[in-house]
Length: 387
Image 1: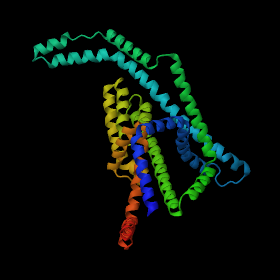
Image 2: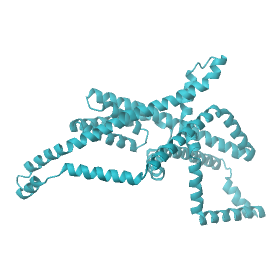
Image 3: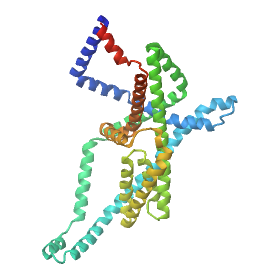
């Protein structure tokens, strides 16, 4: 009894201290996270690369046991996985960024013409309202002055953000260092993953009871399965919908077909919100060339999204994450509010893991109750009453 009350007192004191010094604790957590950022990024990168690596290892002479095959299997598959990710990133930026730049230039050049056409259309429409018609006729915009002021504002804004060349160089070097260290750490993790797995299992066995150890392992396995299925399913679905989008736009002779397909595919990685984001970016770029084709793009994408939502997504991703649509939306909203795009991506599989785990726990408790067995809470209350 004394030990029990001592534990409760320690927990209460710890809770009060956490609440009282929460600001300091959060600042310390932010500092630790910033310091460990390359390692945390490396862990995330290694987890994603491991999905590709495992599949490549099944392709790279899986049945051969020759020494040279065994020695080269892991290095070849690791660096092939990195190469695949690099190619994907380069293709995306190589297609989207130049197209976006061209579209902004076209949009800047065509705005005055579009405004004049709109003005003439409005004048014809307002024949029954002569006063308003005269106001529309007299409306003039000095586009050169407007562009000049916009450029000056942007240059001042950029100058305020990057006040000196040193800050720019510092940010570039810091970002490059973080990415480089993350990649190196990810490579080490991939090469030593079996050893790390054994060591982690040893630590868990040493510091946890057998029952707790088994529960923790089962939770980690569930989380790993859910995250792997989610990432694999989302990537496969993104490739399919991006390819179908590009192919359909080529057939319909819509400009920027390849760029729009890549954009729709990449944004499809973001659950729920990705479809709207891809549609907005693609429509904006096509609009600068042909407003009619932009409408065609939106209509085609709406049809494609319906096919994807009812046929492709259920079969490719389907019930792999086992999370109802309502909770998917909630996970995306909460994750996006807290951690931006990263929160949107990780919120869904994390919520799915907790949802499955909670469902399993509820079912186990119901089975025990049906069999007349006491739950842990009931045993605790009975013990308290006896004491």
